[in-house]
Amino acid sequence: MAKKDRTTDAAREKDREKWMARFQVRLALQPGVDRAVVLQAVKEVTAHCADTGEHPRTAFGDPDAHAVQTAARLVPADRAARARRHNAVLDALDSVSGRAGDIAGP
Image 1 (cartoon, rainbow, N blue to C red):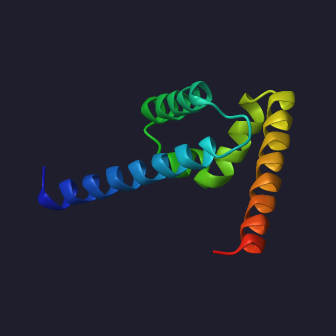
Image 2 (image 1 turned 135 degrees about the vertical axis):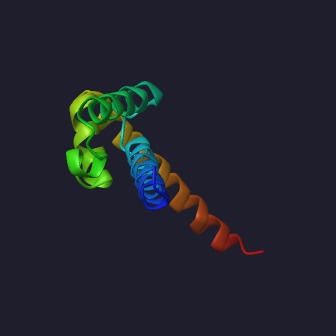
Image 3 (image 1 turned 180 degrees about the horizontal axis):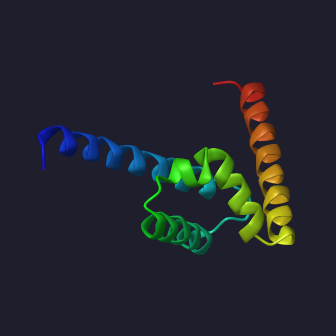
């Protein structure tokens, strides 16, 4: 294999790894997504790319958008809604706590 081919293959592999890492992080940040959902989604993407030889960006597009679509497909709506409510409560408590700290001073 020529040096140029190895360099191109290495760059393609690094780009694929970056796409997968971003997809995993963005997916994990979606409401209601747990480890099992991330593992299932990664398995689906990896299997598709292995079967077709496609780069994940070619097959699935932007990793952020694919993460949102995947979460909507794999996470039950009630679980996602419950997670959003939980996150909203935590955000509100954090805001109140911050204001109380500002009032109390150093």
